[in-house]
Amino acid sequence: MQAGLPLDEKDADEIVEVFRISPTAVAQSLSPMEMIVTGREQDAINDEVDSFHRDYFRQRTYQALQLDFHRQELAEFYYETLRLRELEVESKLVLKNERMVERVATFSKRLTIGQAAEEFGGGFIHVAMLKNAPQPWELGGDPSANANRSLQHDEPRDSANLE
Image (cartoon, rainbow, N blue to C red; front, side, top):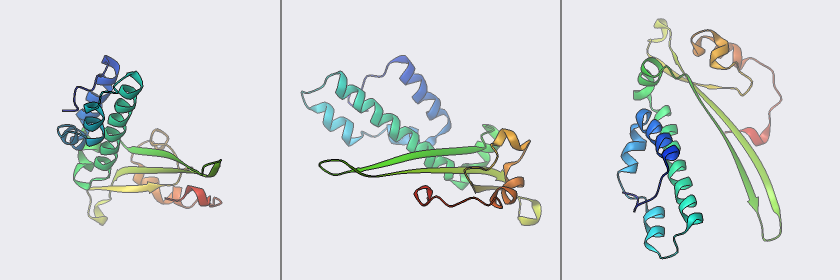
């Protein structure tokens, strides 16, 4: 589908592993990605271009996983079947002019899936966690049980860390 994009065994194994847990990643890979296909139709294919296209394909695959992790209809699948509790995303933006870097901003986002108490309707919920909140393995169970506690920490706000 991606115009013969070469993947070595390590890359292919990684992509297949993400496909196993992200239906959106599978679905999007079945359609040609314009950036890759158009680029590969040109005669300038070399190792650097292959590497760029593989990186682009990996980025799109992980972006699809991020979208799926946010989907309420997949929360039970991630929580119960895969036993996944949290997705943490860190990103860095670098704004440049013709001479120098103008601005750098970093962002961190932690999204946890937990079980809502029966008095709140039960089911699975998504909880945005502060960056200093305990890790899922530190909670000893359901991360949503400690969500209120983690939100009560007094921490100076970092304006470059808002999302």
